[in-house]
Image (cartoon, rainbow, N blue to C red; front, top):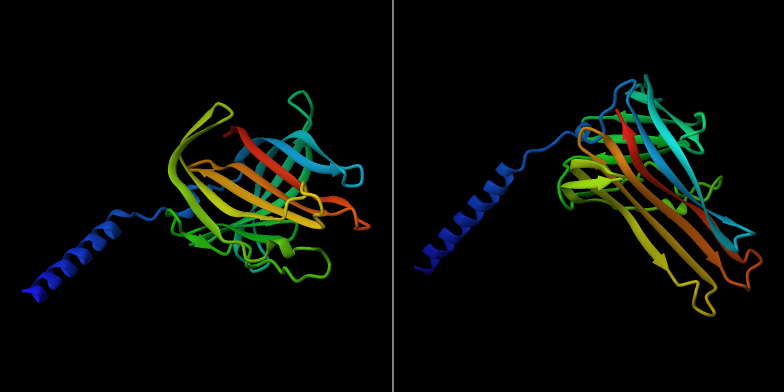
Length: 243
């Protein structure tokens, strides 16, 4: 009798798992990162900088517009898109070209190349708690520039399929990508010789693309160090317009 009960429980468990799998319909990554020539998104940009030899933190405010400029191929011969970023101080100022990026959509991912660094921004399946190594293409051991803080990030889908409002713009279906939230030591405590913080999160809306980004990385050296103070930077993007 116990054997029969065990078999029945196993059958019910397998049936339940299969039902959950059947109910999940994979969405292509392109749904959350649509790319076509002429598409643009405009953002408010808040930039965090450290001034006075790292003793003070300041905020600088701009507007940026990311425009899909052309269909191109990357150095592996894969089809991609060139994205030009335009910058202005405020709505009364003229746009000026500021940077050039590349986005490469594949069957399972969207790669984004910024300052010669290749990030895997989205990956399949777009499902709660799915994770991937988004910085796996970055050489964190490079001697030319300090990229060690990019090492071993776990990008994780969070808050999948939820509505969101940013700057009075409403989006019915969004996904949050939590990338890292790391803190080492507290510089406000007496005797702290070293502290570090790295935080990064992005949010995407279905049919639109990136609607929010927050990145912050700084390192702190205590008074005993010849480089006493903070070094690093931060960026916050929030959508204000799109086509």
